[in-house]
Each structure stands twice: as C-alpha cells, then as structure tokens.
Length: 250
Image (cartoon, rainbow, N blue to C red; front, side, top):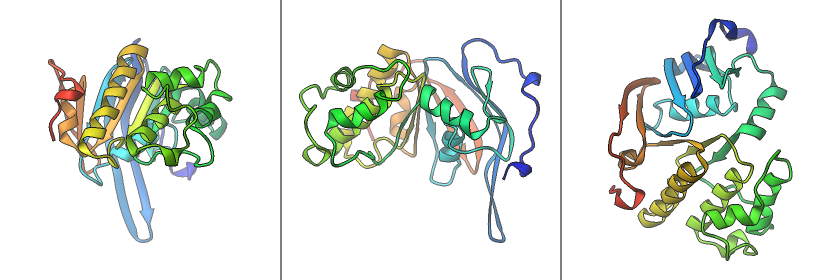
C-alpha cells in the first residue's frame, strides 16, 4: 500500500501555532477490482485548536474518509496531513497507534460498548491505558450519567449509551474528538441531548471537536461548516452567530 503514496517531506511545511490539523492536497484513491474510486481529491483544510467544526455532505462525499485519515485510521494516497507539526503522512503504524491512543477520541454512530461491562467499566477500559486520564466517574458525571455508573448497556437507552461512548472518548483527555454521525441512530430529542453534551465538552474542556454528518440542521451549532461533495470541499462557512443545540431544527 505504501508504495503508491506520493508525499512531500514534512520539512517543507510551516504550520502556524493554533492549528490542530493541516491538510494539503489530500487525495485518497481506492481500487475496487477494475473500478477506481477517488474518495478524496486534493483537499486543503486547516482545523484550529478548540473549534467545533461540522463536516457536512451526502453519503459518498468523502467526509468519513477524511475523518479516518485525520484520526490515523487510514493513510492518504497522496498529499499531506499534520497534527501540531507531527507528520501523520509518514508515520508508521506504531506512531499512528500512539497518536490515536494519546491525542484522539472517537465517537461513532454505533456505540461499541461491551455488553458485559457496566458504564463505569466501559469507560475504565480507556482510562487504564491513557497518560493523564479522568476518573471514569468524573467522565460519566460530565455527560450527565453520574447515577448510571453500575448500569449495563442493555439497561440504558440509546442516548444514554451514546453518552457513555462520549464519556469513554473524553476520559483520556484527548486533544481532538472525532465524531462520525454521532446522532445517526438516535431520534430527534435524544440526538439533541447528545449534541448538547458534545457542545459542553468542546466549551468546558477546549477539545477540538469535528462532527461529520449528512444532517444540515446540525450545522448552525458549529464555529465553521465544511461542505463536501464528490471527494472535494465545496464550501467553508464561518458561523458568526452559533445557536445552541436546543435551538436546532431538522
């Protein structure tokens, strides 16, 4: 796989202070039999420390591919991606594993909780390997589940399970929270509660938060909205007047 990557030395980059991710000419191509799929095409993007960004686009627009590359779950075919001057493009698997473990919290559409463990135990799985973790109880308290510590996933609603997943992601105090359709499996009211938790984490902990979604109604709560289509960024919009999750309509 690596022999197909075209990269430039990181020394050619000068990343200003305050930028979490610097993405330059990022391209990702998948070969599926005789079909070539260009998931990303020469994407340029800066993401800044502490901001809340919504990446908006339909299925197949490239937003999940971009999120996976930002999180060190995938590597580009060509182009550059750096995190605080750490060159992820050239990183080996051990370095990417360390980056994911130390710097990134992931939240997915499906909660991926272990059914046989309580909420507290699910969160503790992460805190046991983190460098400077929160106490599991503190993380669950932050997402409003301080009274659900000993409940198993089957005893929790979908929204509560997603909040456990958020607590698990933030318990290691990541610099970045990457969220892939975090409300996709939830109803309207429950989705709003989860978005309120994400907004609170961003505001209180200063965690750079990236949410990808096809739901345009979520965009109004972001600092910036990045719109994607067919593997390209078509628009970047600054929200001068953010609205609270409670005010969102979709």
